[in-house]
Amino acid sequence: MFIWICRFGSSKRIQSCGYTKSAKNNYYKKPTGHPVVNVETQASRSRRVLILLYAALAYSRLLPPILLGFGGLLAFLHYNDERRAVKIGKDSYTGSDTAAAPIIGGPFTLVNSENQIVNEQDFLGNWVLLYFGYTSSPDIGPDQVRIMAKAIDTLESKENLKVLPIFVTIDPQRDTPAQLRAYLNEFDPRIVGLGGPVSAVRQMAQEYRVYFKKVEEEGDDYLVESSHSMYLIDPKMKVVRCFGVEYNAEQLSKEILKELKKHQVNA
Image (cartoon, rainbow, N blue to C red; front, side):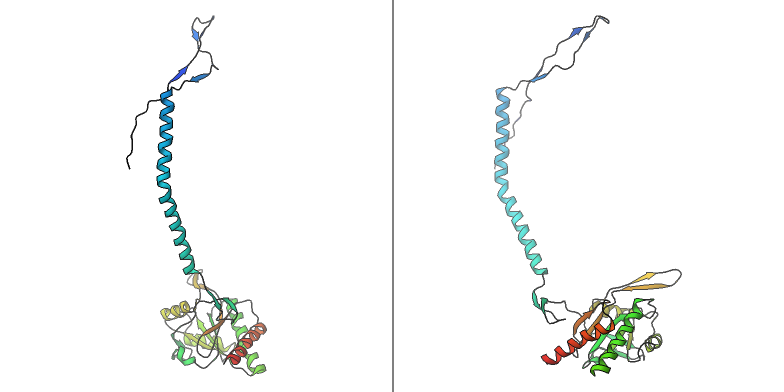
């Protein structure tokens, strides 16, 4: 493609002004308000037309690549959205036809409140109600442990169904096995306490999509922010339901009962 480089002169401008003589100071004063008259030659108009035609021609040649590139960008964004989209299918939590839940859970190796090394294989064959918390939690933590203990007690006493409660500390630096045992015995001695190295606890929390963050307080004290979620796990150690803090003990026991009955029907 050839590019023409042309040198164009500026259009001629003719300004018409009149002058009047001042009687007082004997000098000529330039009056204001006279119009400026632009006189454009035929050559100038021709050059302007050529510029407009050239610009239109260049734009028309560039337009298809621009549109093609824009179309490619849209196609890429659509493909990326399709990859990120969650396919509609069976909800692993509730069994209803809703968006498929992400994979939650995985292998772990921790230390229990009896200072024994345990892993997920040790809990196979049990329905498990899992909660991540810490013994120094000032408010929500104790309430959730209390709800968990009451819910499993209701299921066992009224429905003759056993669910194993497990408490995993997200503050293993302060929650020693002895501290876990003393804390959990105040709620229900059936609750299994798990802790261990910080790296092992963090890995398990990541597997279960648990958020927690240390918040510094005055001195050496600190709190731990967390998501306070409970997980119902089937005898194959697969998460089937997640419960938030909006459930009380009665509601929690009823929802767990539904899941257990559903499992019995599908078994």
